Length: 192
Image (cartoon, rainbow, N blue to C red):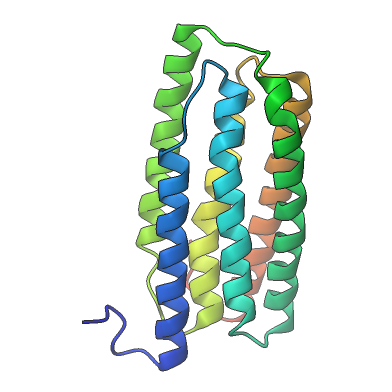
């Protein structure tokens, strides 16, 4: 039985695709091969996180005509694609910056808590038969998770160029969160 059986066909298709992308992101973020570099570990987890944002944005673009939402989704695709390229270029450089066991343990505990919270919030983002609202309620915890992950990583010694990207992630994701909150008010979503 489909969990969104009582919703319209478009919402059912949208939500099924959303949850498929979400589960692929969770698998990608939790099954990475970890190293003794916090920078590398951050990169390896953030790439599948960004890829999910791209796919979720492409998914909503298939279903919405709301121009503001389409612009937000298009901007996410462009920004996350650029960020993935930057992260991929930096991974080799960051291998040269190793962290102590204590730093790694503390970082891993904090990042695991952030990811667990993000996964739970995204999994519980329910369909309200309004694809715009469904996208926003799924993407808010996604972006909040990125801000928290970058904020955790920035507290540890990592390769210097990664620090720049961490700041960029925090700033850009916070700006996107504000845009989504503003749009949610316009289209009468109930987003916290």
